[in-house]
Image (cartoon, rainbow, N blue to C red; front, side, top):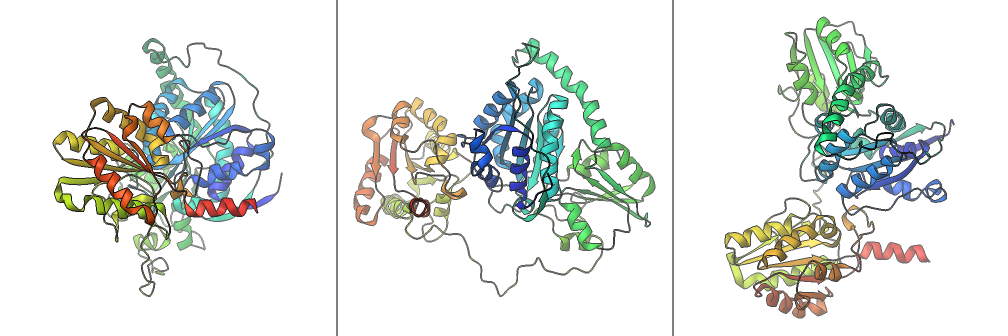
Length: 532
């Protein structure tokens, strides 16, 4: 198949998974990974072949469901943003022990510079921690090719394969040439009935298999076309360029880099090529997005007395994403300053949309807590409503991670805070707030939980939320007293009622839940337009 498509790297991953014969994609929306699943959801092929494509409640359930599909011999794609990998870490680490039958590609979309995230962690460390192969594309075409190859590699080795992409690549477009479409796998199970039963007696044997497979993973990396060595005439420096950093390097050397370059796209690191670089070059410059993983390894385990420089040495900034200007400066080249923010552009801080129900909720909350001063603290969560921290509301005192609003409120109440209020969204609540609420119910903690329900995962584009229409029933099922589950409509005309209800529940010395519910205005408009 020679058809060429103009695709985001996210879309290239999705198209490759479809062409590689997946039977399901499992994901929780999160920038910069969301478009992968959305592309598959809009695919005629996915609908025609009944490929699973519904959103999961969180990243852990996504990984576990994908493992179930791989258990049954079929190919599964699981995708999430980097902080979601933390949520999925339990099944991810155990999946490298159990292994897989059908191919499983685990996409981790990292966000250096924290464009839409709490941190900029590097998911390659998770791949190394789990001891599974990691693929890191430098282009949209490689994102496609690596995904397609990743399923083959997964089935060949019998282990999951991680694909690591970053924001700049995920959200930029380029032409992508497709490969032949492959049919879905037939149902098939392991010949070893103990493989997926990780009791210690079985897990010890599976761990030995994982350790034994490391030699094969290393050999495949050494021979991989994604790891390419380009000789150079100037041996004063050698360059190791990982993933998209290779593009930034070559943009500064359009006629070809004068230094020897090792382009890395598959891990474990190719030791033979690195040894060749170290043997011939006095200094080795490591270019990589995220943490100095390769730099630390080359400077430590593989060092032969060379000077190894990069993010760790201070040659490159320790934080944020790379760009051609940063790389140019590292080589003493003139920078174009194309990537500096021009002073003529006025800053546009994010803000809640006009007409958003969260606005009316925060207006009521601020009015309700005004008289309590330092005796009340409001714990926020991850979603559109996090913007309640900013002016004009300035309502939040904390925001840590998905679901932490409720448990932080509980802990503060345990510490003696008189009025602890949690603000969480409907999608975040079903992602990881339910177990937090259960902890509070178990101890009847004196906290007030506001589930600001806009009936979608709005921050990531309006994806379906599994809790829609079920929040009251879920809270009651978790043990919240029905008389302290209060539903409201966040509108200006209901302001006084909302203030009264919030005050009443704050003064109740137990767990109370308030659910202000109004559909996201943008999602509502899209739904209306789609019906016309």
